[in-house]
Image 1: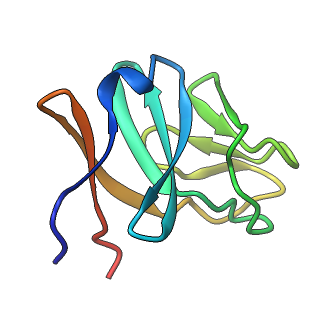
Image 2 (image 1 turned 180 degrees about the horizontal axis):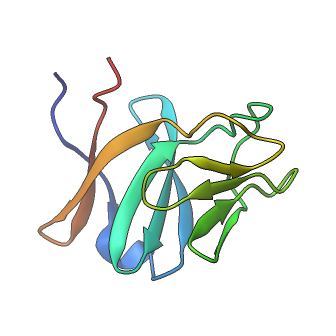
Image 3 (image 1 turned 120 degrees about the vertical axis):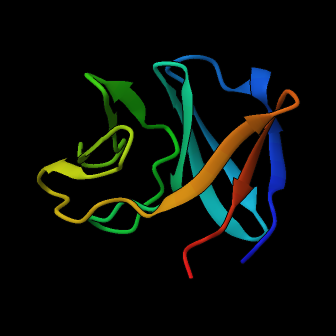
Length: 105
């Protein structure tokens, strides 16, 4: 099991914000929805493109390329063209910073 890694200051991710970060070489997308920070592998399950530039709408992360939507907080795909959920990454806010842990394995 990996350790928690600081990736960004908490203030860098406002409510409704979407922010790409790097977790030891793994591209991750951070989103803040209803006060909570969520993290996912920065890869749309439709075609593998990055979710950077996406936005939150109606409680869903919207892919900027083809409009696939993923439910927050869990990352479940909610409409075509994506059918598979996003890969979640453990996230927490502690001491004014956002920390991630890669528990995918």
